[in-house]
Image (cartoon, rainbow, N blue to C red; front, side, top):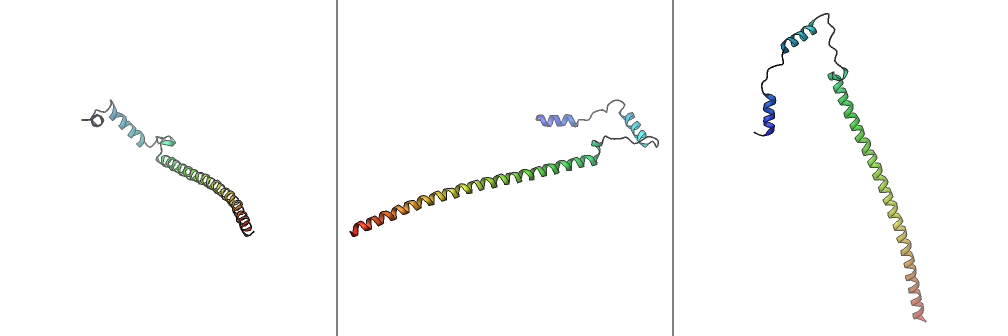
Length: 119
């Protein structure tokens, strides 16, 4: 028998109720059923409706927080993508201008070679 089984067996073992348990239960039932006694007031947080309301608020806040975080992440990704696009466009402009310079030099060299061969 492992530790969990032993603990479960102990927890579920029959035990005698505490002293005067029956009298306390009967007294409470009589008190609640008495017409002149005000109903027992539970703290607000112990009411089932309040528990459900608190749970709903927690779920709502967590959901809105998740949506807000996702929107923030999307904006950050869009900003990174825009920065990468700008870098690529700059690289293409630089490459284009360098290729134009090389092309011009090649044409100049070809022109010089043609004019040198015809003379």
